[in-house]
Length: 86
Image (cartoon, rainbow, N blue to C red):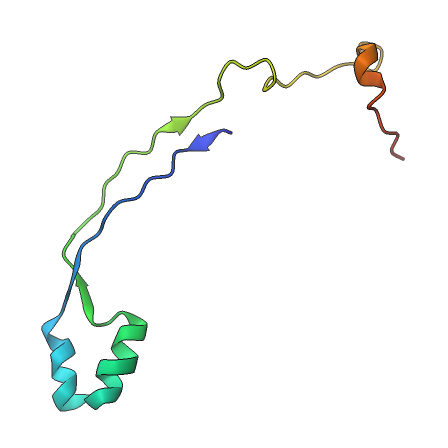
């Protein structure tokens, strides 16, 4: 598999003060439904995320090598696995 490693980076957040303002302006609908569903009740504590991704490369396995053969160069043990397509 070639590509990048998967990384998880923790991003901290806190509940914003205006969320509690919903008691006065938005009522229970804002507190219990709208802000929790949209995520508007949270503010990120982390200003930015900067993470280096490491490249993944294949190991030197013989099984992972790609080999291209001409039609007359195919080994006999592989000829049995050929499927004719039109």
